[in-house]
Image (cartoon, rainbow, N blue to C red; front, side, top):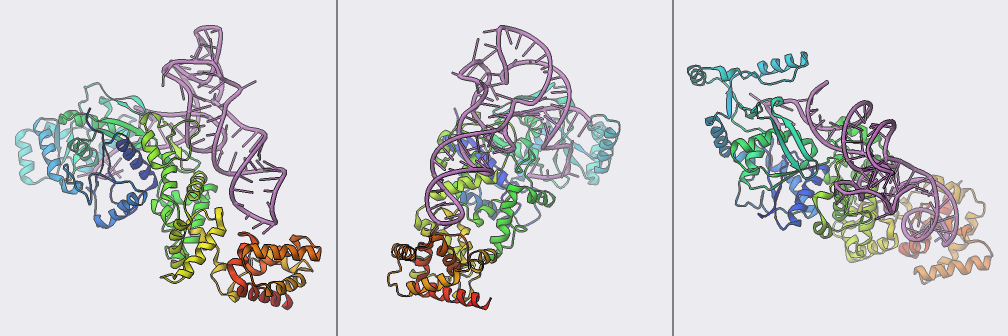
Length: 526
RNA sequence: GGCCCCAUCGUCUAGUCUGGCCCAGGACACUGGAUUUUCAGUCCAGGAACAGGGGUUCAAAUCCCCUUGGGGUCACCA
Protein backbone atom coordinates (compact mmCIF):
# COMPACT_ATOMS: atom_id res chain seq x y z
CA UNK A 1 0.00 0.00 0.00
CA UNK A 2 1.24 3.39 -0.87
CA UNK A 3 1.71 6.08 1.76
CA UNK A 4 -1.24 8.19 2.66
CA UNK A 5 -1.04 11.69 1.26
CA UNK A 6 -3.63 14.30 2.12
CA UNK A 7 -3.84 17.98 1.38
CA UNK A 8 -5.50 21.17 2.32
CA UNK A 9 -5.85 23.79 -0.40
CA UNK A 10 -6.78 27.17 0.98
CA UNK A 11 -7.21 30.18 -1.16
CA UNK A 12 -5.40 33.23 0.19
CA UNK A 13 -8.21 35.24 1.70
CA UNK A 14 -6.38 37.09 4.41
CA UNK A 15 -7.74 35.05 7.28
CA UNK A 16 -8.13 31.44 8.35
CA UNK A 17 -11.70 30.22 8.73
CA UNK A 18 -12.32 28.06 11.80
CA UNK A 19 -14.36 25.61 9.71
CA UNK A 20 -11.59 25.36 7.16
CA UNK A 21 -9.18 24.75 10.00
CA UNK A 22 -11.27 21.78 11.09
CA UNK A 23 -11.12 20.35 7.57
CA UNK A 24 -7.38 20.90 7.52
CA UNK A 25 -7.08 19.23 10.90
CA UNK A 26 -8.87 16.10 9.73
CA UNK A 27 -6.59 15.88 6.70
CA UNK A 28 -3.57 16.40 8.87
CA UNK A 29 -4.75 13.82 11.39
CA UNK A 30 -5.38 11.20 8.74
CA UNK A 31 -1.92 11.71 7.30
CA UNK A 32 -0.24 11.68 10.69
CA UNK A 33 -2.24 8.69 11.85
CA UNK A 34 -0.82 6.74 8.92
CA UNK A 35 2.64 8.24 9.01
CA UNK A 36 1.94 9.80 5.63
CA UNK A 37 2.31 13.30 4.26
CA UNK A 38 0.20 16.38 4.58
CA UNK A 39 0.44 18.86 1.74
CA UNK A 40 -0.48 22.52 1.77
CA UNK A 41 -1.36 23.82 -1.65
CA UNK A 42 -2.42 27.35 -2.40
CA UNK A 43 -5.42 27.88 -4.64
CA UNK A 44 -4.62 31.30 -5.99
CA UNK A 45 -5.86 31.03 -9.55
CA UNK A 46 -8.38 33.79 -9.07
CA UNK A 47 -6.30 36.09 -6.98
CA UNK A 48 -6.09 39.80 -7.50
CA UNK A 49 -4.59 40.85 -4.23
CA UNK A 50 -1.18 40.27 -2.77
CA UNK A 51 -0.95 36.53 -2.30
CA UNK A 52 1.93 36.53 0.18
CA UNK A 53 0.14 38.98 2.41
CA UNK A 54 -3.18 37.16 2.20
CA UNK A 55 -1.51 33.84 2.87
CA UNK A 56 0.41 34.83 5.97
CA UNK A 57 -2.54 34.65 8.39
CA UNK A 58 -3.34 31.18 7.11
CA UNK A 59 0.15 29.84 7.62
CA UNK A 60 0.23 31.56 10.97
CA UNK A 61 -2.91 29.70 12.07
CA UNK A 62 -1.31 26.36 11.20
CA UNK A 63 1.80 27.29 13.11
CA UNK A 64 -0.13 28.49 16.12
CA UNK A 65 -1.98 25.19 16.34
CA UNK A 66 1.16 23.22 15.66
CA UNK A 67 -0.09 21.60 12.47
CA UNK A 68 2.96 21.25 10.30
CA UNK A 69 2.95 20.51 6.61
CA UNK A 70 5.39 18.29 4.79
CA UNK A 71 5.16 20.05 1.47
CA UNK A 72 3.95 23.48 0.51
CA UNK A 73 4.78 27.15 1.01
CA UNK A 74 8.07 27.84 2.82
CA UNK A 75 8.89 24.15 2.53
CA UNK A 76 8.75 23.17 -1.09
CA UNK A 77 8.67 19.49 -1.92
CA UNK A 78 9.12 17.19 -4.86
CA UNK A 79 5.67 17.75 -6.31
CA UNK A 80 5.87 21.54 -6.46
CA UNK A 81 5.28 24.25 -7.18
CA UNK A 82 2.60 24.49 -4.53
CA UNK A 83 0.97 27.65 -5.75
CA UNK A 84 -1.58 27.02 -8.45
CA UNK A 85 -0.70 30.29 -10.12
CA UNK A 86 2.70 28.74 -10.83
CA UNK A 87 1.33 25.54 -12.26
CA UNK A 88 -0.42 26.91 -15.32
CA UNK A 89 1.79 24.93 -17.69
CA UNK A 90 0.62 21.75 -16.09
CA UNK A 91 -3.02 22.67 -16.49
CA UNK A 92 -2.49 23.81 -20.03
CA UNK A 93 -0.88 20.51 -20.92
CA UNK A 94 -3.78 18.64 -19.40
CA UNK A 95 -6.26 20.77 -21.27
CA UNK A 96 -4.43 20.20 -24.52
CA UNK A 97 -4.52 16.48 -23.94
CA UNK A 98 -8.26 16.55 -23.37
CA UNK A 99 -8.73 18.75 -26.41
CA UNK A 100 -6.65 16.48 -28.61
CA UNK A 101 -8.59 13.45 -27.47
CA UNK A 102 -11.91 15.15 -28.11
CA UNK A 103 -12.79 15.05 -24.41
CA UNK A 104 -13.03 18.81 -24.17
CA UNK A 105 -13.95 21.56 -26.59
CA UNK A 106 -13.40 25.21 -27.18
CA UNK A 107 -16.63 27.04 -26.52
CA UNK A 108 -16.88 30.26 -28.50
CA UNK A 109 -20.30 31.15 -27.17
CA UNK A 110 -20.05 34.40 -25.24
CA UNK A 111 -21.07 34.21 -21.56
CA UNK A 112 -24.35 36.02 -22.30
CA UNK A 113 -25.43 33.25 -24.66
CA UNK A 114 -24.75 30.52 -22.13
CA UNK A 115 -26.51 32.52 -19.49
CA UNK A 116 -29.53 32.91 -21.75
CA UNK A 117 -29.56 29.17 -22.39
CA UNK A 118 -29.47 28.57 -18.69
CA UNK A 119 -32.26 31.05 -18.06
CA UNK A 120 -34.39 29.48 -20.75
CA UNK A 121 -33.95 26.05 -19.24
CA UNK A 122 -34.89 27.36 -15.85
CA UNK A 123 -37.96 29.08 -17.22
CA UNK A 124 -39.11 25.87 -18.81
CA UNK A 125 -38.30 24.01 -15.58
CA UNK A 126 -35.95 21.88 -17.59
CA UNK A 127 -32.58 20.62 -16.43
CA UNK A 128 -29.89 22.75 -18.01
CA UNK A 129 -27.37 21.14 -20.32
CA UNK A 130 -24.96 23.02 -22.55
CA UNK A 131 -26.08 23.32 -26.14
CA UNK A 132 -22.53 22.75 -27.41
CA UNK A 133 -22.96 24.95 -30.48
CA UNK A 134 -19.22 25.27 -30.94
CA UNK A 135 -19.04 21.54 -31.44
CA UNK A 136 -21.05 21.96 -34.65
CA UNK A 137 -18.47 24.32 -36.11
CA UNK A 138 -16.60 23.05 -39.13
CA UNK A 139 -12.82 22.84 -38.93
CA UNK A 140 -12.55 25.80 -41.25
CA UNK A 141 -14.86 27.91 -39.10
CA UNK A 142 -13.01 27.00 -35.98
CA UNK A 143 -9.69 27.89 -37.54
CA UNK A 144 -11.10 31.18 -38.66
CA UNK A 145 -12.44 32.00 -35.21
CA UNK A 146 -9.10 31.25 -33.69
CA UNK A 147 -7.28 33.27 -36.30
CA UNK A 148 -9.59 36.17 -35.50
CA UNK A 149 -8.65 35.76 -31.88
CA UNK A 150 -12.20 35.20 -30.80
CA UNK A 151 -12.41 34.59 -27.07
CA UNK A 152 -13.31 31.13 -25.91
CA UNK A 153 -13.37 28.97 -22.84
CA UNK A 154 -12.53 25.31 -22.74
CA UNK A 155 -15.30 23.07 -21.51
CA UNK A 156 -15.01 19.49 -20.49
CA UNK A 157 -17.28 17.35 -22.63
CA UNK A 158 -19.32 15.46 -20.11
CA UNK A 159 -19.97 11.92 -21.37
CA UNK A 160 -23.73 12.21 -21.13
CA UNK A 161 -24.39 8.63 -22.13
CA UNK A 162 -21.94 7.12 -19.68
CA UNK A 163 -24.66 6.22 -17.22
CA UNK A 164 -23.72 6.91 -13.61
CA UNK A 165 -20.60 8.23 -11.98
CA UNK A 166 -20.19 7.06 -8.45
CA UNK A 167 -17.84 7.08 -5.52
CA UNK A 168 -17.52 5.02 -2.39
CA UNK A 169 -17.12 7.81 0.10
CA UNK A 170 -15.47 7.08 3.44
CA UNK A 171 -18.20 8.98 5.23
CA UNK A 172 -21.21 8.89 2.91
CA UNK A 173 -20.85 5.44 1.45
CA UNK A 174 -22.01 4.92 -2.10
CA UNK A 175 -23.02 8.13 -3.84
CA UNK A 176 -23.89 8.34 -7.52
CA UNK A 177 -24.92 10.88 -10.12
CA UNK A 178 -26.48 10.63 -13.53
CA UNK A 179 -24.01 11.77 -16.19
CA UNK A 180 -26.87 12.85 -18.39
CA UNK A 181 -27.74 15.59 -15.94
CA UNK A 182 -24.34 17.24 -15.61
CA UNK A 183 -23.60 20.45 -17.54
CA UNK A 184 -20.20 20.80 -19.24
CA UNK A 185 -17.98 22.62 -16.82
CA UNK A 186 -15.53 25.30 -17.93
CA UNK A 187 -12.09 23.99 -17.18
CA UNK A 188 -10.12 26.90 -18.58
CA UNK A 189 -11.10 30.53 -18.57
CA UNK A 190 -10.82 32.91 -21.46
CA UNK A 191 -7.62 34.24 -19.90
CA UNK A 192 -6.02 30.81 -19.88
CA UNK A 193 -6.37 30.26 -16.14
CA UNK A 194 -7.83 26.96 -14.97
CA UNK A 195 -10.93 26.63 -12.81
CA UNK A 196 -11.01 25.09 -9.40
CA UNK A 197 -12.71 21.84 -10.37
CA UNK A 198 -10.07 21.19 -12.97
CA UNK A 199 -6.98 22.48 -11.23
CA UNK A 200 -7.87 20.47 -8.17
CA UNK A 201 -8.05 17.26 -10.13
CA UNK A 202 -4.78 17.85 -11.96
CA UNK A 203 -3.02 18.87 -8.75
CA UNK A 204 -4.39 16.10 -6.59
CA UNK A 205 -3.39 13.57 -9.21
CA UNK A 206 0.03 15.07 -9.93
CA UNK A 207 0.73 15.46 -6.25
CA UNK A 208 -0.24 11.85 -5.66
CA UNK A 209 -2.93 12.71 -3.13
CA UNK A 210 -4.46 9.46 -1.94
CA UNK A 211 -7.29 10.79 0.19
CA UNK A 212 -9.34 13.85 -0.57
CA UNK A 213 -10.86 14.88 2.73
CA UNK A 214 -13.00 17.95 2.40
CA UNK A 215 -16.23 19.48 3.57
CA UNK A 216 -19.53 18.09 2.38
CA UNK A 217 -20.27 21.19 0.34
CA UNK A 218 -17.90 19.75 -2.25
CA UNK A 219 -19.78 16.52 -2.62
CA UNK A 220 -21.64 17.70 -5.72
CA UNK A 221 -18.37 18.76 -7.36
CA UNK A 222 -17.10 15.25 -7.05
CA UNK A 223 -19.13 13.94 -9.97
CA UNK A 224 -17.38 16.20 -12.46
CA UNK A 225 -14.05 15.64 -10.80
CA UNK A 226 -14.28 11.88 -11.02
CA UNK A 227 -15.15 12.20 -14.69
CA UNK A 228 -12.12 14.42 -15.11
CA UNK A 229 -9.80 11.95 -13.39
CA UNK A 230 -11.05 9.24 -15.70
CA UNK A 231 -10.74 11.37 -18.84
CA UNK A 232 -7.21 12.31 -17.89
CA UNK A 233 -6.31 8.71 -17.18
CA UNK A 234 -5.54 9.32 -13.54
CA UNK A 235 -6.31 7.02 -10.64
CA UNK A 236 -9.29 8.31 -8.72
CA UNK A 237 -8.34 9.08 -5.12
CA UNK A 238 -10.40 8.06 -2.15
CA UNK A 239 -12.90 10.60 -0.91
CA UNK A 240 -14.17 11.52 2.51
CA UNK A 241 -16.77 14.23 2.60
CA UNK A 242 -16.91 15.35 6.17
CA UNK A 243 -19.76 17.43 7.56
CA UNK A 244 -19.10 21.14 7.53
CA UNK A 245 -18.90 23.15 10.70
CA UNK A 246 -22.25 24.78 11.28
CA UNK A 247 -23.03 28.03 13.04
CA UNK A 248 -23.89 27.53 16.73
CA UNK A 249 -27.36 26.15 17.17
CA UNK A 250 -27.97 25.66 13.45
CA UNK A 251 -27.27 23.21 10.67
CA UNK A 252 -26.12 26.00 8.41
CA UNK A 253 -22.58 26.28 7.20
CA UNK A 254 -20.61 28.71 9.32
CA UNK A 255 -20.01 31.75 7.19
CA UNK A 256 -17.98 34.90 7.44
CA UNK A 257 -20.43 37.05 5.55
CA UNK A 258 -21.47 40.19 7.39
CA UNK A 259 -25.16 39.39 7.22
CA UNK A 260 -24.57 36.04 8.86
CA UNK A 261 -22.29 37.55 11.43
CA UNK A 262 -25.10 39.83 12.54
CA UNK A 263 -27.25 36.76 13.06
CA UNK A 264 -24.55 34.99 15.04
CA UNK A 265 -24.30 37.93 17.39
CA UNK A 266 -27.83 37.22 18.51
CA UNK A 267 -27.15 33.58 19.30
CA UNK A 268 -26.78 33.39 23.09
CA UNK A 269 -23.71 31.15 23.06
CA UNK A 270 -21.98 32.88 20.21
CA UNK A 271 -22.81 36.26 21.66
CA UNK A 272 -20.50 35.55 24.56
CA UNK A 273 -17.57 35.29 22.20
CA UNK A 274 -18.47 38.48 20.38
CA UNK A 275 -18.91 40.34 23.64
CA UNK A 276 -15.57 39.07 24.80
CA UNK A 277 -13.99 40.48 21.68
CA UNK A 278 -15.62 43.84 22.20
CA UNK A 279 -14.38 43.95 25.75
CA UNK A 280 -10.85 42.69 25.20
CA UNK A 281 -9.67 43.71 21.73
CA UNK A 282 -10.05 47.47 22.16
CA UNK A 283 -7.79 47.26 25.21
CA UNK A 284 -4.98 45.58 23.32
CA UNK A 285 -5.23 47.59 20.15
CA UNK A 286 -6.95 44.98 18.00
CA UNK A 287 -10.15 46.76 17.10
CA UNK A 288 -13.25 44.83 18.12
CA UNK A 289 -15.44 41.95 17.04
CA UNK A 290 -15.91 43.92 13.84
CA UNK A 291 -12.34 43.22 12.84
CA UNK A 292 -11.69 39.93 14.58
CA UNK A 293 -14.58 37.52 15.14
CA UNK A 294 -15.01 33.92 16.23
CA UNK A 295 -15.25 32.66 12.66
CA UNK A 296 -11.54 33.34 12.35
CA UNK A 297 -8.86 31.22 13.96
CA UNK A 298 -6.96 34.36 14.85
CA UNK A 299 -9.78 35.36 17.19
CA UNK A 300 -9.10 32.40 19.45
CA UNK A 301 -5.43 33.08 19.57
CA UNK A 302 -5.85 36.74 20.38
CA UNK A 303 -8.58 36.27 22.96
CA UNK A 304 -6.29 33.91 24.79
CA UNK A 305 -7.35 30.39 24.00
CA UNK A 306 -4.85 27.57 24.20
CA UNK A 307 -4.06 25.74 20.95
CA UNK A 308 -4.72 22.52 22.86
CA UNK A 309 -8.28 23.64 23.60
CA UNK A 310 -9.06 24.77 20.07
CA UNK A 311 -7.60 21.57 18.65
CA UNK A 312 -9.56 19.48 21.13
CA UNK A 313 -12.74 21.35 20.31
CA UNK A 314 -12.22 21.12 16.58
CA UNK A 315 -11.46 17.43 16.72
CA UNK A 316 -14.72 16.82 18.53
CA UNK A 317 -16.86 18.56 15.93
CA UNK A 318 -18.07 15.66 13.85
CA UNK A 319 -15.75 13.12 15.33
CA UNK A 320 -15.66 11.16 18.54
CA UNK A 321 -13.58 8.31 19.84
CA UNK A 322 -16.22 6.57 21.90
CA UNK A 323 -19.04 7.31 24.30
CA UNK A 324 -16.96 9.02 26.97
CA UNK A 325 -13.58 10.40 25.98
CA UNK A 326 -13.72 14.17 25.74
CA UNK A 327 -10.39 15.72 26.71
CA UNK A 328 -7.80 14.64 24.22
CA UNK A 329 -4.31 15.80 23.42
CA UNK A 330 -3.29 16.12 19.80
CA UNK A 331 -1.02 13.10 20.09
CA UNK A 332 -3.85 11.08 21.49
CA UNK A 333 -6.13 12.11 18.65
CA UNK A 334 -3.48 11.27 16.05
CA UNK A 335 -3.21 7.86 17.58
CA UNK A 336 -6.95 7.28 17.52
CA UNK A 337 -8.27 9.23 14.56
CA UNK A 338 -10.11 7.24 11.94
CA UNK A 339 -12.49 8.32 9.21
CA UNK A 340 -15.06 5.70 10.07
CA UNK A 341 -15.78 7.54 13.29
CA UNK A 342 -16.61 10.79 11.56
CA UNK A 343 -20.33 11.53 11.75
CA UNK A 344 -22.46 12.29 8.74
CA UNK A 345 -24.60 15.17 9.91
CA UNK A 346 -23.58 18.80 10.13
CA UNK A 347 -22.23 19.73 13.53
CA UNK A 348 -22.41 23.14 15.09
CA UNK A 349 -19.54 24.88 16.75
CA UNK A 350 -20.40 25.01 20.45
CA UNK A 351 -18.73 27.97 22.15
CA UNK A 352 -19.65 26.69 25.60
CA UNK A 353 -18.03 23.36 24.96
CA UNK A 354 -14.98 25.05 23.54
CA UNK A 355 -14.75 27.12 26.69
CA UNK A 356 -15.03 23.94 28.73
CA UNK A 357 -12.09 22.42 26.84
CA UNK A 358 -10.23 25.63 27.45
CA UNK A 359 -10.84 25.37 31.20
CA UNK A 360 -9.54 21.83 31.17
CA UNK A 361 -6.38 22.62 29.25
CA UNK A 362 -5.75 25.79 31.18
CA UNK A 363 -5.84 23.67 34.29
CA UNK A 364 -2.97 21.64 32.87
CA UNK A 365 -0.73 24.67 32.47
CA UNK A 366 1.96 25.60 34.95
CA UNK A 367 2.03 28.97 36.65
CA UNK A 368 5.09 29.94 34.63
CA UNK A 369 3.33 29.26 31.35
CA UNK A 370 0.30 31.25 32.43
CA UNK A 371 2.48 34.18 33.40
CA UNK A 372 4.30 34.14 30.08
CA UNK A 373 1.03 34.25 28.21
CA UNK A 374 -0.64 36.84 30.41
CA UNK A 375 2.20 39.35 30.44
CA UNK A 376 1.76 40.41 26.80
CA UNK A 377 -1.87 41.30 27.47
CA UNK A 378 -0.92 43.51 30.37
CA UNK A 379 1.80 45.12 28.30
CA UNK A 380 -0.45 45.78 25.33
CA UNK A 381 -3.11 47.23 27.60
CA UNK A 382 -0.53 49.52 29.13
CA UNK A 383 -0.92 48.12 32.63
CA UNK A 384 2.73 47.22 32.98
CA UNK A 385 5.89 48.42 31.23
CA UNK A 386 6.87 46.86 27.92
CA UNK A 387 9.88 45.23 29.56
CA UNK A 388 8.46 44.06 32.86
CA UNK A 389 11.06 43.79 35.60
CA UNK A 390 11.41 40.82 37.90
CA UNK A 391 9.29 42.45 40.57
CA UNK A 392 6.42 42.98 38.15
CA UNK A 393 6.64 39.43 36.87
CA UNK A 394 6.54 38.13 40.38
CA UNK A 395 3.56 40.27 41.20
CA UNK A 396 1.70 39.00 38.14
CA UNK A 397 2.68 35.49 39.13
CA UNK A 398 1.22 35.94 42.58
CA UNK A 399 -1.94 37.40 41.11
CA UNK A 400 -2.36 34.49 38.71
CA UNK A 401 -1.74 32.06 41.50
CA UNK A 402 -4.42 33.75 43.60
CA UNK A 403 -6.75 33.76 40.61
CA UNK A 404 -6.52 29.97 40.25
CA UNK A 405 -9.33 28.61 38.06
CA UNK A 406 -10.76 32.06 37.65
CA UNK A 407 -8.30 32.61 34.86
CA UNK A 408 -9.89 30.78 31.96
CA UNK A 409 -8.61 32.71 29.00
CA UNK A 410 -5.30 34.52 29.10
CA UNK A 411 -7.08 37.76 28.36
CA UNK A 412 -9.06 37.32 31.58
CA UNK A 413 -6.10 38.89 33.31
CA UNK A 414 -7.30 42.21 31.93
CA UNK A 415 -10.38 41.95 34.11
CA UNK A 416 -8.28 42.55 37.22
CA UNK A 417 -7.16 46.08 36.57
CA UNK A 418 -7.59 46.96 40.25
CA UNK A 419 -4.22 45.39 40.97
CA UNK A 420 -2.49 47.64 38.50
CA UNK A 421 -4.11 51.04 38.91
CA UNK A 422 -3.12 53.75 41.35
CA UNK A 423 -5.03 53.69 44.61
CA UNK A 424 -6.93 56.86 43.88
CA UNK A 425 -7.88 55.68 40.39
CA UNK A 426 -9.47 52.43 41.39
CA UNK A 427 -13.13 52.31 40.39
CA UNK A 428 -15.90 50.84 42.49
CA UNK A 429 -18.66 48.57 41.33
CA UNK A 430 -21.55 50.93 41.97
CA UNK A 431 -24.24 48.46 42.94
CA UNK A 432 -21.94 46.59 45.27
CA UNK A 433 -20.73 49.87 46.75
CA UNK A 434 -24.30 50.65 47.75
CA UNK A 435 -25.00 47.20 49.04
CA UNK A 436 -21.80 46.55 50.96
CA UNK A 437 -20.62 49.95 52.05
CA UNK A 438 -23.32 52.58 51.86
CA UNK A 439 -26.31 50.65 53.12
CA UNK A 440 -25.00 48.71 56.13
CA UNK A 441 -24.75 51.33 58.89
CA UNK A 442 -21.89 49.63 60.65
CA UNK A 443 -19.77 49.23 57.50
CA UNK A 444 -17.86 52.48 57.87
CA UNK A 445 -17.16 52.26 61.59
CA UNK A 446 -16.12 48.62 61.39
CA UNK A 447 -13.92 49.34 58.44
CA UNK A 448 -12.32 52.26 60.23
CA UNK A 449 -11.71 50.13 63.25
CA UNK A 450 -10.23 47.21 61.34
CA UNK A 451 -8.08 49.65 59.40
CA UNK A 452 -6.19 50.31 62.63
CA UNK A 453 -5.69 46.60 63.14
CA UNK A 454 -4.16 46.40 59.71
CA UNK A 455 -2.04 49.46 60.35
CA UNK A 456 -0.54 47.73 63.34
CA UNK A 457 0.08 44.52 61.50
CA UNK A 458 3.58 43.79 60.28
CA UNK A 459 3.04 40.43 58.66
CA UNK A 460 0.98 40.98 55.54
CA UNK A 461 0.95 37.40 54.35
CA UNK A 462 -2.42 35.89 53.53
CA UNK A 463 -2.17 33.46 56.42
CA UNK A 464 -1.33 36.12 58.97
CA UNK A 465 -4.12 38.37 57.72
CA UNK A 466 -6.54 35.48 57.89
CA UNK A 467 -5.58 34.92 61.51
CA UNK A 468 -5.74 38.62 62.29
CA UNK A 469 -9.25 39.05 60.97
CA UNK A 470 -10.56 35.89 62.56
CA UNK A 471 -9.28 36.88 65.96
CA UNK A 472 -10.66 40.36 65.54
CA UNK A 473 -14.21 39.27 64.66
CA UNK A 474 -14.08 36.79 67.51
CA UNK A 475 -13.09 39.50 69.93
CA UNK A 476 -15.78 41.80 68.60
CA UNK A 477 -18.25 38.94 68.61
CA UNK A 478 -19.48 39.72 65.13
CA UNK A 479 -19.87 37.55 62.05
CA UNK A 480 -17.22 37.57 59.33
CA UNK A 481 -19.78 38.72 56.83
CA UNK A 482 -20.14 42.03 58.64
CA UNK A 483 -16.65 43.18 57.76
CA UNK A 484 -15.33 41.07 54.92
CA UNK A 485 -17.56 42.37 52.14
CA UNK A 486 -16.92 45.95 53.10
CA UNK A 487 -13.21 45.24 53.22
CA UNK A 488 -13.23 43.62 49.80
CA UNK A 489 -15.10 46.54 48.30
CA UNK A 490 -12.89 49.09 49.96
CA UNK A 491 -9.67 47.51 48.73
CA UNK A 492 -10.59 46.12 45.32
CA UNK A 493 -13.76 47.96 44.35
CA UNK A 494 -15.37 44.68 43.37
CA UNK A 495 -17.79 42.29 45.01
CA UNK A 496 -16.03 39.17 43.72
CA UNK A 497 -12.53 37.96 43.12
CA UNK A 498 -9.79 35.84 44.67
CA UNK A 499 -9.77 35.01 48.34
CA UNK A 500 -9.94 38.12 50.53
CA UNK A 501 -6.61 37.54 52.21
CA UNK A 502 -4.88 36.90 48.93
CA UNK A 503 -6.22 40.23 47.71
CA UNK A 504 -4.92 42.08 50.74
CA UNK A 505 -1.56 40.36 50.65
CA UNK A 506 -1.24 41.07 46.95
CA UNK A 507 -1.88 44.77 47.44
CA UNK A 508 0.34 45.09 50.48
CA UNK A 509 -0.11 47.17 53.56
CA UNK A 510 0.36 50.65 52.14
CA UNK A 511 -2.05 50.24 49.27
CA UNK A 512 -4.67 48.56 51.45
CA UNK A 513 -4.56 51.37 53.97
CA UNK A 514 -4.62 54.03 51.26
CA UNK A 515 -7.63 52.43 49.62
CA UNK A 516 -9.49 52.03 52.88
CA UNK A 517 -8.84 55.65 53.72
CA UNK A 518 -10.08 56.76 50.35
CA UNK A 519 -13.20 54.64 50.73
CA UNK A 520 -13.86 56.00 54.18
CA UNK A 521 -13.51 59.52 52.86
CA UNK A 522 -15.98 58.78 50.08
CA UNK A 523 -18.45 57.41 52.60
CA UNK A 524 -18.15 60.50 54.76
CA UNK A 525 -18.82 62.76 51.81
CA UNK A 526 -22.11 60.90 51.35
C1' G B 1 -37.02 24.15 -8.63
C1' G B 2 -33.31 19.89 -10.32
C1' C B 3 -29.53 16.95 -8.23
C1' C B 4 -27.14 15.34 -3.77
C1' C B 5 -26.59 14.81 1.56
C1' C B 6 -28.53 14.51 6.49
C1' A B 7 -32.18 13.36 10.73
C1' U B 8 -30.81 10.36 18.82
C1' C B 9 -31.46 15.16 25.01
C1' G B 10 -30.97 22.72 24.11
C1' U B 11 -25.72 21.48 22.00
C1' C B 12 -21.56 17.86 20.76
C1' U B 13 -22.14 12.80 20.58
C1' A B 14 -22.38 6.79 21.98
C1' G B 15 -25.45 3.12 20.19
C1' U B 16 -27.27 2.01 13.67
C1' C B 17 -23.24 -1.57 9.32
C1' U B 18 -23.17 -7.12 12.59
C1' G B 19 -31.77 -6.11 15.37
C1' G B 20 -32.36 -8.20 21.70
C1' C B 21 -27.29 -6.31 26.96
C1' C B 22 -30.95 0.75 25.23
C1' C B 23 -38.23 2.06 28.83
C1' A B 24 -31.24 4.91 25.11
C1' G B 25 -25.01 6.07 27.80
C1' G B 26 -21.41 10.28 28.24
C1' A B 27 -19.93 15.42 27.85
C1' C B 28 -21.22 20.68 27.60
C1' A B 29 -25.12 23.84 29.02
C1' C B 30 -29.21 24.31 32.46
C1' U B 31 -31.78 23.58 37.46
C1' G B 32 -31.48 22.26 42.74
C1' G B 33 -28.42 21.03 46.99
C1' A B 34 -23.62 20.72 49.73
C1' U B 35 -18.81 23.26 50.51
C1' U B 36 -16.54 28.34 50.63
C1' U B 37 -15.89 35.36 53.36
C1' U B 38 -17.41 36.71 47.53
C1' C B 39 -16.69 34.81 42.78
C1' A B 40 -14.51 30.71 40.33
C1' G B 41 -13.98 25.68 41.41
C1' U B 42 -15.26 20.98 43.53
C1' C B 43 -18.92 17.20 45.07
C1' C B 44 -23.93 15.22 44.88
C1' A B 45 -28.72 15.21 42.69
C1' G B 46 -32.24 16.41 38.69
C1' G B 47 -34.91 17.48 34.18
C1' A B 48 -33.87 16.52 29.09
C1' A B 49 -33.83 12.83 22.83
C1' C B 50 -34.58 7.89 19.02
C1' A B 51 -38.97 13.65 13.44
C1' G B 52 -43.84 11.11 11.82
C1' G B 53 -46.31 6.98 9.53
C1' G B 54 -46.34 2.22 7.57
C1' G B 55 -44.06 -2.47 7.17
C1' U B 56 -40.39 -6.99 8.22
C1' U B 57 -39.53 -9.71 12.92
C1' C B 58 -40.78 -13.35 18.76
C1' A B 59 -38.04 -8.55 19.17
C1' A B 60 -36.35 -2.12 15.79
C1' A B 61 -33.13 3.87 17.73
C1' U B 62 -31.04 -0.12 14.83
C1' C B 63 -33.49 -3.37 8.49
C1' C B 64 -37.16 -1.72 4.23
C1' C B 65 -40.74 1.93 2.18
C1' C B 66 -43.25 6.59 2.35
C1' U B 67 -43.91 11.42 4.39
C1' U B 68 -42.04 15.58 6.80
C1' G B 69 -38.17 18.59 8.17
C1' G B 70 -33.18 20.54 7.76
C1' G B 71 -28.89 21.44 4.76
C1' G B 72 -25.57 21.62 0.51
C1' U B 73 -24.99 22.62 -4.60
C1' C B 74 -26.37 24.26 -9.29
C1' A B 75 -20.42 30.47 -12.08
C1' C B 76 -15.24 32.17 -17.05
C1' C B 77 -15.59 31.70 -7.18
C1' A B 78 -12.95 28.32 -4.40
